[in-house]
Length: 137
Image 1 (cartoon, rainbow, N blue to C red):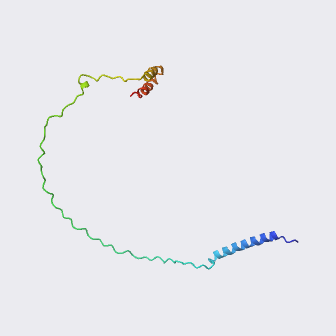
Image 2: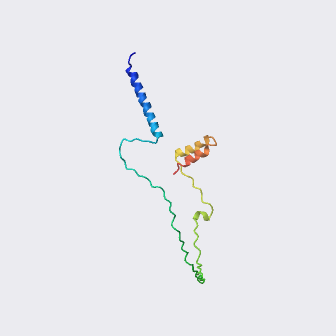
Image 3: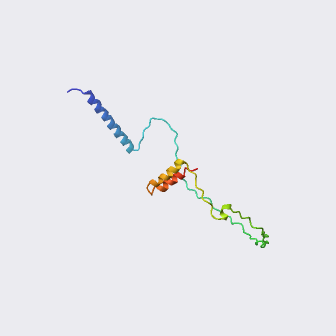
């Protein structure tokens, strides 16, 4: 029988792991703990103690005194001012009828573009005219 070192190491390692697990579970079951020995400050919380709340005292509201309302005051209305009516201003064009329509001055290119709007579809003509007229200064 030959001695296989690799198999022995694996077996020893697995045995150590199983032994550590069993000892940890036994310690947990017995509520036993182990430590390395590092002291740390510990705080033990005191048990809760019931104390009754202090008595509540109510101070009565101060008495309310009502004064009679002051006598009504009547004032004379302010004097009215009837001055002349404000002047009416008329624009000279509106006195004798509607204002004459002034045709915009178009350049040659704008005039040709406006004339070419007729060649478009009827649906597109208003947009074409609006585009040309938006370039007028």
